[in-house]
Length: 151
Image (cartoon, rainbow, N blue to C red; front, side):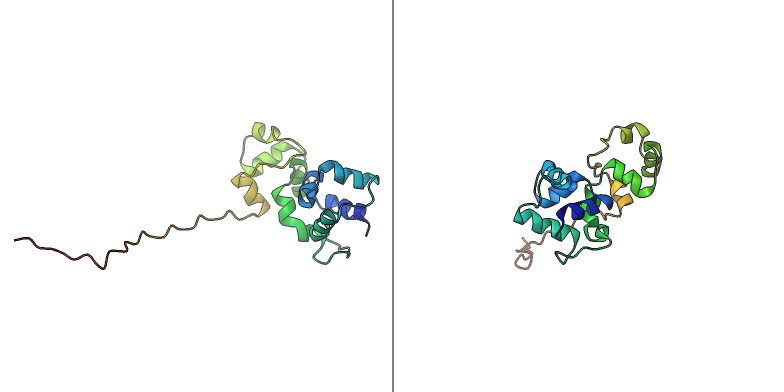
């Protein structure tokens, strides 16, 4: 398997080096070494993780790795990748869609994951988990209590 092309395919689909490294359980520098050709293959456990990120069937290249690793990429997407995904040229466009101040969006680093704000998660299609309804307090002695009348 050509690990370099698999990683480049993920990057082409919108993943960042940091998100790929996190998914593989290695450092971003290890991923860069594979891309540069200085490392031919990752460790076995990292290779299996990379294969799972790329495709459910390891050793088979797929046309759209984005569909397989979408949740992983989206949850760690960089600001640059987010702008590219929606075709925005500037942070102002992204801020308008997110209904956030432009200064706040401009303060986000370009190559790090965007903050998990509700507006960002909604834009990425990630459903916020609803808190489980707390069960009503049940009194274990409710059936044993009787009314007492005093004369």
